[in-house]
Image 1: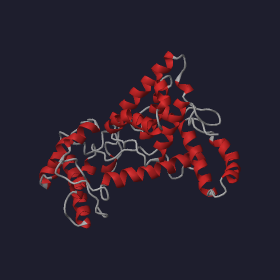
Image 2: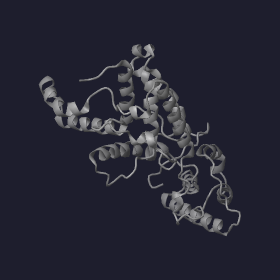
Image 3: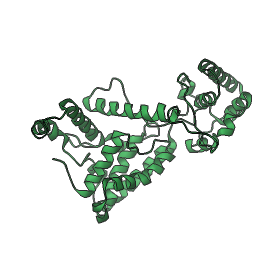
Image 4: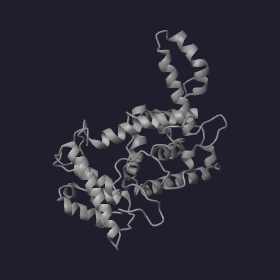
Length: 326
């Protein structure tokens, strides 16, 4: 609201503005930056700033407070008026919900809420929009829950978790046919030995490429080591936590991608057609299936602007071509 961001419903009569779109700027760019900070902090043992892997979720269409914010973001009002009006409506909804006996206890998938939320709803008068949220959204904490602020309601990711479980079940089934278990999915990044590069690579590059920026190379190596540890390879070859998510509260975009990474490699490791594919072709193939699942999970699609995505797909490219960079 302060930075005059905009919300795009997908309507044909709307104009998408990349520079001000809230989904693009507040969620995608912010998520990408936080993910890299989390992975590197996790690897270094410094998790003081991030206790959990950033979920990768965009707008939470199950949360009534976020819908109120979108309602006013879409209005031609001054920022301070948007902020006050949204706070007033959220408080009014909570008060009215507390007085209702037939409290809405529905827990539909985010997918269902997303496609109910449209330009028509945003154009409703305030009272009708408020009434719609009270009738169709969970606006109070569940019984037995401690008091939480409205923005913390309905944060479960049931759709994403079901997709995660489905991918993991498929992975385990294919592994079983090969006589191995999910514990064997721990090889991490395939295309390079980041530990070796950290020990020997800088000296070698100084000789071969005297103009290289040593500090940037060192940061790259640390990033590869961090991603490698996160994806699965570590000194004791332990399992990545991403393969053992047990609830919809803990599933994240990266955990879903890690499962898909091992599944994709396994499904195509005997496919000779992969050998002739360029990186661009494999990148498009990798994302063709997973993007649909990411969309249904309300996660961001595979992006060439996300360094984690690029590293992961390039690792699949190297694995299926059985190449490595010494």
